[in-house]
Length: 200
Image (cartoon, rainbow, N blue to C red; front, side, top):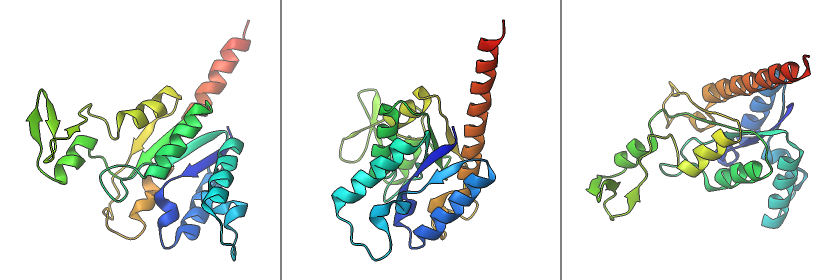
């Protein structure tokens, strides 16, 4: 498992290309090749890609990857970026291991509660509009967390000391490095299992 697709809202940061380059460098230091969405041919400097071209190019990168490493740091709200959620699901559907990371350690319910008061509703919690809120003690929506876990991956949460509003906090570098450690652990587990199967 050498090639990793690096999904996340990082692509929307002002210094997105620099962030991607730094994450690719960290991947190389850990023995992996990182594929960052902005690296695809549809987004070369001077080009004006259409939505369809970007979609197809990113899907091609995901097809090339052995596994996904997805940044689930909350983006424009209390939950993960919508495009990243799709990419996670795409990788899961392709039966590739997916590893997630986030710069917040607060569970999903607590983050929703920070955005407005919650009230009990028929044994569950609801927001001010009466919409039910998941309460499984998970870091994200259950579909995202379960997809990661069922793929064999893990979700890593590391609070960024700089704070969520600091420059590049969205890139969640500390959690990213820890997540790559989880990928290494997964690889070692696969190697041990393969050795056991080969032994007489």
